[in-house]
Image 1: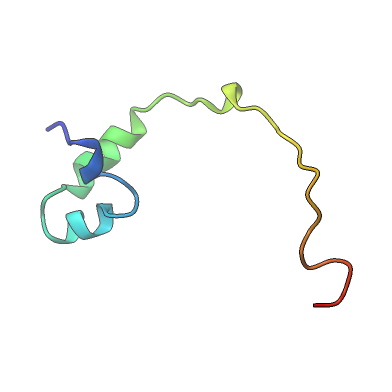
Image 2: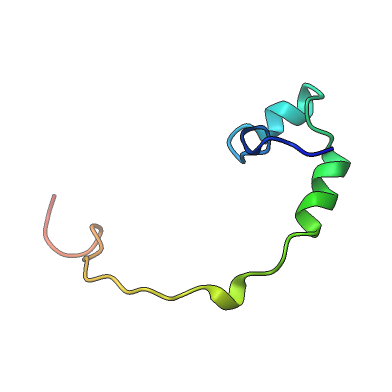
Amino acid sequence: MAYEEFMIDKRVVKRNIASGVVDAKELAKLTAALPDRAANAETIGSDLEDEDEGGED
């Protein structure tokens, strides 16, 4: 079964599994079949300072 993206969104998928709208085993098969895209990731830097460091609040 193909699911609409909103049904397997990580913010609602647990609720959809609990209510029977999404099958957990089928979702596991679907996610296992996804290609590994880690090699396409880029590391980015930030010039922002950590809010916990420096000065008093």
